Length: 270
Image (cartoon, rainbow, N blue to C red; front, side):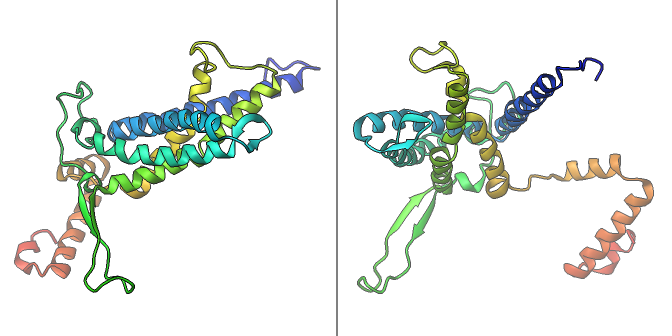
């Protein structure tokens, strides 16, 4: 507040607002991307790869089949390129997932920060990474007992939805960046990547994709991983003596009521 000057309030508060927007769009979303790393490299690598793949196929499909302009702010973006990139990204996601699931480096949580792709991580994989056989029910319009089955990991199904987001929603980060460039009348944010417009042009969709991957993982994939040692440590460090006694009594009563544990085994706790 001490730096505010009469006549410059609008300029200073505009910069103040842009600073908060930059922090939200970059720092906050980068925080979620970093959290994805600790859940397994697949949750960092695959979303990033899908955005890059979608960008590449949008260009290829656009110059090959593009006829209909998608948005006025980016004249070179076409509906055909947009839809074609969605289809190709979804196919790529299924095959990429099949490759990544073969390495525990990608599917195991990062409990060892010194691990690499050849050794260092071992775990019981989340069930979503294990192959399952899906069989169709009996269909009325087909011969009796006719069934079709396919074996695949549930993660490959989830990969399709991640690819759909990377193709239909994440590109709006690029549209926003295009609008920003038009506002300041610049062609590219930089020339660090020849022919592509710099690092910023490559990253404009990555942040929103990383945030979505974090929310998707914790909504549909994550499983409870609490251990006895963690629960005991929490009880010993965060609860008072009276609360610890109450916890023991509650646990004893629960075991007696729900699992038919004989009273003699839990009477000493209650």
